[in-house]
Length: 449
Image (cartoon, rainbow, N blue to C red):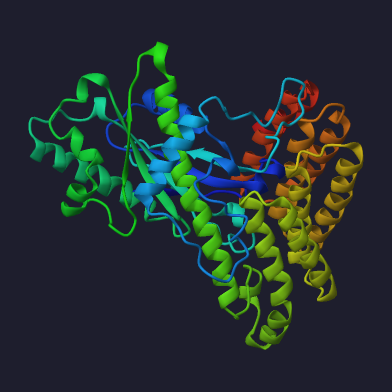
């Protein structure tokens, strides 16, 4: 059984992370921390995926009321391999370039935000808790999980039967962890096979879906469970990277299918859309929540389209949500709609002075709205998101310091104490990134106190 840890509302992340899909990377089986870090780095190198690299065009069916004709997982993976082969020269770009300003693909790209999970002292994987704010902000949800299993570190097997038992234990461990993430839509365990293990008993079973499912490993409705990735010598890593990319493309395609399905689910239901604040309201408030449904629905659509790398459509939905939430006095969801609009405006790569100034103007309104609702964690997180984004732009040091100071002052009201500690740790790192060493020392002193 995995352990749980409390997770803040993306405290210290960038405003741009609202446009990224959260994917967990977790160790499976007997794998050292060093080896896990090494393999996780190979996987996380594929973090930006142009829509043209995916097996189907989601833009055409994203807002459709009829189900899309999806390829089977096996054919989808086969096509992912073909695309990865053709597209092998394409590499993921960092969010920040040499000049300190964010870079983007010249076309819309799905962004995967990887989160590495650690083990506790007893060896159990520490799984992040689900946030009660996931309905309010789709980027908080865990949409995918990738397990990393190093076959070289596995217990030696002497027969196909022993190998099947090993794979079943591996699958059960992986499945136990991912089952604790309710919003999860796609999961796969990447098995890294060293050259000297290819001919070992049972290794060929990893690609035999029928045999695995017959042994109770996996589910026919979900398709293949294991992604087999062979090792390669240092001088021929391209083959490994290409296969990793193909496997990640497959996972990403399934995540996008789930995002599509979430949109259809919203369209097919008519009940109120709630935030944790609404849980405190009495039954008499139901009529108010019903009036506010459409504005909140538009905001939810905007969040999902943003994750699907459809920023123009997301902005349209956010604009509608802003109008409706203002009319209904729904301040919390107005703040969320404004934040989403800012993220969509930046996701196109438009960092002109006019656009950034417009984002900052909306950010001031967002902070005021959260402050009025006494949602200090959201207020602090919003300030840190914009500060982190500004720190990556040239000539925005003064503005970065302004929002960092705002976050520190608002953070005094954070509870419990560990949230204030987490905030100041982020502030120290942020100040070091912008070479504000005196400010970093001040926050470090406050952290020590």
